[in-house]
Length: 323
Image (cartoon, rainbow, N blue to C red; front, side, top):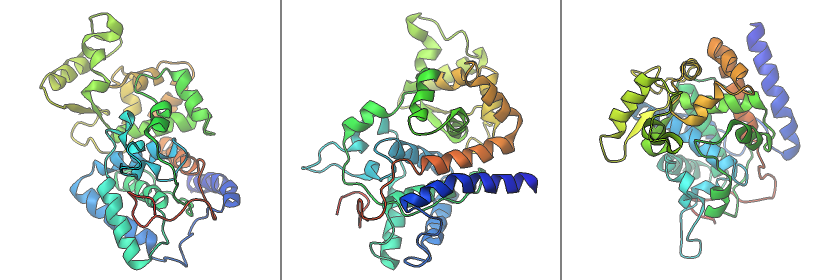
Protein backbone atom coordinates (compact mmCIF):
# COMPACT_ATOMS: atom_id res chain seq x y z
CA UNK A 1 0.00 0.00 0.00
CA UNK A 2 2.85 2.41 0.86
CA UNK A 3 4.50 1.68 -2.49
CA UNK A 4 1.26 2.36 -4.35
CA UNK A 5 0.73 5.66 -2.52
CA UNK A 6 4.30 6.73 -3.24
CA UNK A 7 3.85 5.88 -6.92
CA UNK A 8 0.69 7.99 -7.15
CA UNK A 9 2.42 10.87 -5.36
CA UNK A 10 5.38 10.75 -7.73
CA UNK A 11 3.10 10.78 -10.75
CA UNK A 12 1.16 13.74 -9.34
CA UNK A 13 4.38 15.64 -8.73
CA UNK A 14 5.32 15.23 -12.39
CA UNK A 15 1.85 16.01 -13.68
CA UNK A 16 1.27 19.18 -11.61
CA UNK A 17 3.87 21.35 -13.40
CA UNK A 18 2.24 20.78 -16.77
CA UNK A 19 -1.01 22.28 -15.51
CA UNK A 20 0.54 25.61 -16.41
CA UNK A 21 0.83 24.45 -20.02
CA UNK A 22 -2.91 23.65 -20.01
CA UNK A 23 -2.47 19.88 -20.06
CA UNK A 24 -4.60 18.07 -17.52
CA UNK A 25 -5.89 14.62 -16.71
CA UNK A 26 -9.39 14.19 -18.13
CA UNK A 27 -9.06 17.04 -20.61
CA UNK A 28 -11.77 15.50 -22.83
CA UNK A 29 -14.25 14.72 -20.04
CA UNK A 30 -16.69 17.30 -21.39
CA UNK A 31 -15.81 17.68 -25.07
CA UNK A 32 -15.45 13.94 -25.81
CA UNK A 33 -16.30 11.87 -22.71
CA UNK A 34 -15.65 8.49 -24.33
CA UNK A 35 -12.35 9.47 -25.94
CA UNK A 36 -10.08 7.41 -23.72
CA UNK A 37 -12.43 4.43 -23.78
CA UNK A 38 -12.48 4.47 -27.59
CA UNK A 39 -8.69 4.55 -27.69
CA UNK A 40 -8.42 1.78 -25.12
CA UNK A 41 -10.85 -0.52 -26.91
CA UNK A 42 -9.20 -0.20 -30.30
CA UNK A 43 -5.72 -0.69 -28.86
CA UNK A 44 -6.92 -3.78 -26.99
CA UNK A 45 -8.43 -5.17 -30.20
CA UNK A 46 -5.15 -4.65 -32.08
CA UNK A 47 -3.07 -6.05 -29.22
CA UNK A 48 -5.14 -9.23 -29.30
CA UNK A 49 -4.01 -9.80 -32.89
CA UNK A 50 -0.52 -8.35 -32.63
CA UNK A 51 1.11 -7.94 -29.20
CA UNK A 52 4.14 -6.34 -30.86
CA UNK A 53 2.04 -3.18 -31.14
CA UNK A 54 3.31 -2.22 -27.67
CA UNK A 55 6.84 -1.85 -29.01
CA UNK A 56 5.60 -0.14 -32.17
CA UNK A 57 3.61 2.53 -30.35
CA UNK A 58 6.29 3.14 -27.73
CA UNK A 59 8.81 3.74 -30.50
CA UNK A 60 6.38 6.01 -32.34
CA UNK A 61 5.76 8.06 -29.19
CA UNK A 62 9.49 8.37 -28.49
CA UNK A 63 10.36 9.37 -32.05
CA UNK A 64 7.59 11.93 -32.18
CA UNK A 65 8.20 13.58 -28.80
CA UNK A 66 11.96 13.95 -29.16
CA UNK A 67 11.66 15.87 -32.44
CA UNK A 68 9.94 19.23 -31.94
CA UNK A 69 7.98 17.82 -29.00
CA UNK A 70 4.88 15.64 -28.83
CA UNK A 71 3.00 17.22 -31.74
CA UNK A 72 2.20 14.26 -34.04
CA UNK A 73 4.57 15.66 -36.68
CA UNK A 74 5.81 12.09 -37.23
CA UNK A 75 2.42 11.09 -38.63
CA UNK A 76 2.43 13.45 -41.63
CA UNK A 77 2.58 11.78 -45.06
CA UNK A 78 4.68 13.21 -47.91
CA UNK A 79 2.92 15.43 -50.46
CA UNK A 80 4.00 17.43 -53.48
CA UNK A 81 4.35 20.51 -51.31
CA UNK A 82 5.85 18.61 -48.34
CA UNK A 83 7.91 15.87 -50.04
CA UNK A 84 10.07 14.88 -47.07
CA UNK A 85 8.32 14.94 -43.69
CA UNK A 86 9.70 13.35 -40.49
CA UNK A 87 8.22 10.01 -41.49
CA UNK A 88 10.74 9.83 -44.35
CA UNK A 89 13.79 10.22 -42.10
CA UNK A 90 16.10 7.22 -41.89
CA UNK A 91 15.65 6.65 -38.14
CA UNK A 92 11.88 6.54 -38.66
CA UNK A 93 11.95 3.85 -41.32
CA UNK A 94 11.13 1.18 -38.76
CA UNK A 95 8.31 3.08 -37.07
CA UNK A 96 4.96 1.39 -37.62
CA UNK A 97 1.43 1.38 -36.24
CA UNK A 98 0.23 4.37 -38.24
CA UNK A 99 -2.87 2.53 -39.43
CA UNK A 100 -3.98 1.97 -35.83
CA UNK A 101 -3.72 5.71 -35.15
CA UNK A 102 -5.82 6.27 -38.30
CA UNK A 103 -8.43 3.82 -37.06
CA UNK A 104 -8.64 5.51 -33.68
CA UNK A 105 -8.84 8.96 -35.25
CA UNK A 106 -11.68 7.88 -37.55
CA UNK A 107 -13.66 6.53 -34.60
CA UNK A 108 -13.10 9.71 -32.58
CA UNK A 109 -14.00 12.00 -35.47
CA UNK A 110 -17.26 10.11 -35.91
CA UNK A 111 -18.20 10.76 -32.28
CA UNK A 112 -16.41 14.06 -31.51
CA UNK A 113 -15.37 15.92 -34.67
CA UNK A 114 -12.22 18.03 -34.36
CA UNK A 115 -11.91 17.54 -30.61
CA UNK A 116 -9.15 14.99 -29.95
CA UNK A 117 -5.66 15.69 -31.24
CA UNK A 118 -3.51 13.13 -32.98
CA UNK A 119 -0.72 13.81 -30.49
CA UNK A 120 -3.02 12.86 -27.61
CA UNK A 121 -4.10 9.73 -29.50
CA UNK A 122 -0.47 8.61 -29.76
CA UNK A 123 0.13 9.31 -26.08
CA UNK A 124 -3.01 7.50 -24.90
CA UNK A 125 -2.60 4.56 -27.28
CA UNK A 126 0.98 4.06 -26.13
CA UNK A 127 -0.07 4.16 -22.48
CA UNK A 128 -2.78 1.54 -23.08
CA UNK A 129 -0.51 -0.74 -25.11
CA UNK A 130 2.16 -0.67 -22.39
CA UNK A 131 -0.37 -1.83 -19.81
CA UNK A 132 -1.69 -4.59 -22.08
CA UNK A 133 1.87 -5.82 -22.57
CA UNK A 134 2.34 -6.26 -18.83
CA UNK A 135 3.72 -2.82 -18.08
CA UNK A 136 2.49 -0.28 -15.53
CA UNK A 137 -0.89 1.40 -15.48
CA UNK A 138 -0.53 5.17 -15.30
CA UNK A 139 -2.50 8.33 -15.98
CA UNK A 140 -1.44 10.94 -18.51
CA UNK A 141 -2.56 14.54 -18.84
CA UNK A 142 -4.08 15.43 -22.20
CA UNK A 143 -4.79 18.59 -24.15
CA UNK A 144 -1.91 18.48 -26.63
CA UNK A 145 -2.42 20.02 -30.03
CA UNK A 146 -0.93 18.99 -33.36
CA UNK A 147 1.97 20.80 -34.98
CA UNK A 148 2.27 22.56 -38.33
CA UNK A 149 5.84 21.50 -39.21
CA UNK A 150 7.25 18.12 -40.21
CA UNK A 151 10.71 17.90 -41.82
CA UNK A 152 12.86 14.81 -42.21
CA UNK A 153 16.05 16.76 -41.55
CA UNK A 154 14.84 17.58 -38.05
CA UNK A 155 14.57 13.89 -37.20
CA UNK A 156 17.82 12.99 -38.94
CA UNK A 157 19.77 15.39 -36.78
CA UNK A 158 18.18 14.53 -33.44
CA UNK A 159 17.21 10.88 -33.05
CA UNK A 160 19.98 8.73 -31.55
CA UNK A 161 21.38 5.56 -33.10
CA UNK A 162 21.85 2.14 -31.45
CA UNK A 163 25.58 2.69 -30.96
CA UNK A 164 25.33 6.03 -29.15
CA UNK A 165 27.88 6.34 -26.32
CA UNK A 166 26.32 6.42 -22.85
CA UNK A 167 27.44 9.99 -22.00
CA UNK A 168 25.89 11.26 -25.24
CA UNK A 169 22.72 9.32 -24.50
CA UNK A 170 22.45 10.92 -21.05
CA UNK A 171 22.99 14.36 -22.60
CA UNK A 172 20.28 13.62 -25.14
CA UNK A 173 17.76 12.82 -22.43
CA UNK A 174 19.05 15.53 -20.12
CA UNK A 175 18.34 18.16 -22.75
CA UNK A 176 14.68 17.15 -22.48
CA UNK A 177 14.62 17.36 -18.70
CA UNK A 178 15.18 13.69 -17.93
CA UNK A 179 17.71 12.19 -15.55
CA UNK A 180 19.60 8.89 -15.63
CA UNK A 181 16.73 7.00 -13.96
CA UNK A 182 14.35 8.21 -16.67
CA UNK A 183 16.76 7.47 -19.50
CA UNK A 184 17.56 3.91 -18.42
CA UNK A 185 13.89 3.19 -17.69
CA UNK A 186 12.80 4.38 -21.14
CA UNK A 187 15.48 2.28 -22.80
CA UNK A 188 14.03 -0.59 -20.80
CA UNK A 189 11.19 -0.51 -23.31
CA UNK A 190 13.55 -2.71 -25.33
CA UNK A 191 12.09 -5.51 -23.22
CA UNK A 192 9.37 -5.65 -25.90
CA UNK A 193 11.50 -4.35 -28.77
CA UNK A 194 12.59 -5.85 -32.06
CA UNK A 195 15.77 -4.77 -33.81
CA UNK A 196 16.75 -5.27 -37.42
CA UNK A 197 20.04 -7.07 -38.00
CA UNK A 198 21.50 -3.96 -39.57
CA UNK A 199 21.50 -2.33 -36.13
CA UNK A 200 23.79 -4.90 -34.54
CA UNK A 201 25.31 -7.18 -37.20
CA UNK A 202 28.69 -5.47 -36.86
CA UNK A 203 28.87 -6.80 -33.30
CA UNK A 204 28.54 -10.33 -34.68
CA UNK A 205 31.14 -10.32 -37.42
CA UNK A 206 33.21 -7.13 -37.66
CA UNK A 207 33.13 -5.19 -34.43
CA UNK A 208 34.69 -1.74 -34.86
CA UNK A 209 36.47 -2.94 -38.00
CA UNK A 210 38.37 -5.76 -36.29
CA UNK A 211 36.94 -8.52 -38.48
CA UNK A 212 35.92 -10.31 -35.28
CA UNK A 213 32.78 -10.43 -33.13
CA UNK A 214 32.43 -8.08 -30.19
CA UNK A 215 34.45 -9.87 -27.46
CA UNK A 216 32.21 -8.44 -24.77
CA UNK A 217 29.05 -10.09 -26.14
CA UNK A 218 28.00 -13.47 -24.77
CA UNK A 219 29.30 -16.02 -27.34
CA UNK A 220 26.13 -18.07 -27.26
CA UNK A 221 24.00 -15.03 -28.03
CA UNK A 222 26.38 -13.95 -30.79
CA UNK A 223 26.11 -17.40 -32.39
CA UNK A 224 22.32 -17.40 -32.30
CA UNK A 225 22.13 -13.92 -33.76
CA UNK A 226 24.59 -14.81 -36.54
CA UNK A 227 22.29 -17.67 -37.52
CA UNK A 228 19.31 -15.32 -37.53
CA UNK A 229 21.01 -12.60 -39.53
CA UNK A 230 22.60 -14.94 -42.06
CA UNK A 231 19.19 -16.17 -43.20
CA UNK A 232 19.00 -13.35 -45.74
CA UNK A 233 16.32 -10.80 -46.35
CA UNK A 234 15.29 -8.23 -43.76
CA UNK A 235 15.91 -10.22 -40.61
CA UNK A 236 15.36 -9.03 -37.06
CA UNK A 237 15.64 -10.30 -33.50
CA UNK A 238 14.03 -9.64 -30.13
CA UNK A 239 16.05 -7.15 -28.09
CA UNK A 240 15.12 -9.06 -24.95
CA UNK A 241 16.50 -12.56 -25.42
CA UNK A 242 15.64 -13.60 -21.85
CA UNK A 243 12.02 -14.42 -22.67
CA UNK A 244 12.15 -16.19 -26.05
CA UNK A 245 8.69 -17.69 -25.64
CA UNK A 246 7.16 -14.39 -24.57
CA UNK A 247 9.13 -11.75 -26.49
CA UNK A 248 6.48 -9.10 -25.92
CA UNK A 249 6.29 -9.44 -22.15
CA UNK A 250 7.01 -6.13 -20.42
CA UNK A 251 9.29 -6.91 -17.47
CA UNK A 252 12.71 -6.23 -15.98
CA UNK A 253 14.40 -9.39 -17.27
CA UNK A 254 15.89 -7.20 -19.99
CA UNK A 255 18.13 -5.62 -17.35
CA UNK A 256 19.23 -9.00 -16.03
CA UNK A 257 20.08 -9.98 -19.58
CA UNK A 258 22.27 -6.98 -20.35
CA UNK A 259 24.15 -7.47 -17.07
CA UNK A 260 24.99 -10.98 -18.36
CA UNK A 261 26.53 -9.54 -21.57
CA UNK A 262 23.43 -10.47 -23.56
CA UNK A 263 22.48 -7.05 -24.81
CA UNK A 264 21.69 -7.16 -28.52
CA UNK A 265 22.29 -3.47 -29.22
CA UNK A 266 25.63 -1.95 -28.29
CA UNK A 267 23.95 0.85 -26.34
CA UNK A 268 22.02 -1.69 -24.27
CA UNK A 269 25.23 -3.55 -23.50
CA UNK A 270 27.00 -0.34 -22.51
CA UNK A 271 24.22 0.62 -20.11
CA UNK A 272 25.20 -2.32 -17.91
CA UNK A 273 28.91 -1.52 -17.90
CA UNK A 274 29.22 2.26 -17.90
CA UNK A 275 29.71 3.72 -14.41
CA UNK A 276 27.02 6.35 -15.00
CA UNK A 277 24.28 3.79 -15.64
CA UNK A 278 25.38 0.39 -14.33
CA UNK A 279 24.04 1.09 -10.84
CA UNK A 280 20.62 2.03 -12.17
CA UNK A 281 20.58 -1.07 -14.37
CA UNK A 282 21.29 -3.18 -11.29
CA UNK A 283 18.47 -1.53 -9.33
CA UNK A 284 15.97 -2.24 -12.11
CA UNK A 285 17.28 -5.79 -12.58
CA UNK A 286 16.57 -6.71 -8.97
CA UNK A 287 13.34 -4.74 -8.56
CA UNK A 288 10.68 -5.11 -11.22
CA UNK A 289 8.25 -2.79 -9.42
CA UNK A 290 10.87 -0.05 -9.23
CA UNK A 291 11.49 -0.34 -12.96
CA UNK A 292 7.80 -0.16 -13.80
CA UNK A 293 7.16 2.79 -11.48
CA UNK A 294 10.06 4.75 -12.93
CA UNK A 295 9.05 3.83 -16.47
CA UNK A 296 5.60 5.29 -15.85
CA UNK A 297 7.09 8.49 -14.44
CA UNK A 298 9.48 8.79 -17.38
CA UNK A 299 6.68 8.22 -19.91
CA UNK A 300 4.61 11.00 -18.36
CA UNK A 301 7.63 13.31 -18.50
CA UNK A 302 8.36 12.36 -22.10
CA UNK A 303 4.76 13.00 -23.09
CA UNK A 304 5.08 16.56 -21.80
CA UNK A 305 8.12 17.51 -23.89
CA UNK A 306 7.59 20.80 -25.76
CA UNK A 307 3.84 20.27 -26.17
CA UNK A 308 1.52 22.67 -27.96
CA UNK A 309 -1.57 23.70 -25.98
CA UNK A 310 -4.27 26.34 -25.88
CA UNK A 311 -4.46 28.18 -29.19
CA UNK A 312 -1.15 26.86 -30.51
CA UNK A 313 -1.17 24.23 -33.24
CA UNK A 314 -4.36 22.60 -34.45
CA UNK A 315 -6.61 19.57 -34.05
CA UNK A 316 -6.10 17.60 -37.28
CA UNK A 317 -9.06 15.94 -38.92
CA UNK A 318 -6.69 13.47 -40.57
CA UNK A 319 -3.55 12.55 -38.65
CA UNK A 320 -1.57 12.13 -41.86
CA UNK A 321 -2.17 15.66 -43.16
CA UNK A 322 -2.30 19.23 -41.93
CA UNK A 323 -5.79 20.74 -42.03
